Length: 295
Image 1 (tube, rainbow, N blue to C red):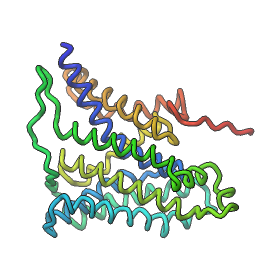
Image 2 (cartoon, rainbow, N blue to C red):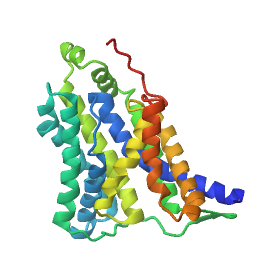
Image 3 (cartoon, rainbow, N blue to C red):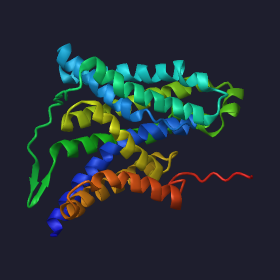
Image 4 (cartoon, one colour):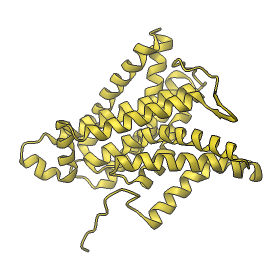
């Protein structure tokens, strides 16, 4: 295989990985704040894309209005999930809160296509389909722009944790009881984390919806996002950037090199293999904090 094809696969794969990483960043954001692994993030991405489709197609708003409106609506949905569902899990075993997020994932995955139909919905965010040609290399324009937007949002979320509200959320993630004792409104901080996570999911859903259309399969982004969140470290946003590039490139190379030999299907194995290998070899991920408890 020539070097130009390897470079092409790597660039497109890195951009794809960044778009996966945006979904993973939402998982990390909630985990950093509340200690709960949000398994509904894939369905939130799908729901956000459906909301944007409703705004742009059914209501007739231009996308430059529909997309921010969808993000605003989904911020409210995320905060509402925390208020009506997750807050009821306070004092319950952690596994119950995680199972609740899985229930939300399954419910949204069925409700949204059930209400709006199972056919693929076309969504146009104004990115031309023509690839960028750089010598012998073809770069997918949608993936490149989507990867750039995703990278910018993840970096912005890292910087956000140095703001006043971000410091409060970091305090909540370190010790909720101590935060309560000094007057921090822990529930509000967690609700903001859920809202911001839903906005990240909506952005990712829009970018992927422009690439493959909007239907229930967008919720499957959860598997890729989990692989990236676990590999990077469930409490590390910088780890998400590194893991996103790694997962995207590995997946792209596997598709370009292994699929022609075995006849396809390697893309779906990569994420699962990364999850298993990370949990067995380095459970806290590349940049995650290692928690050691006395037994």
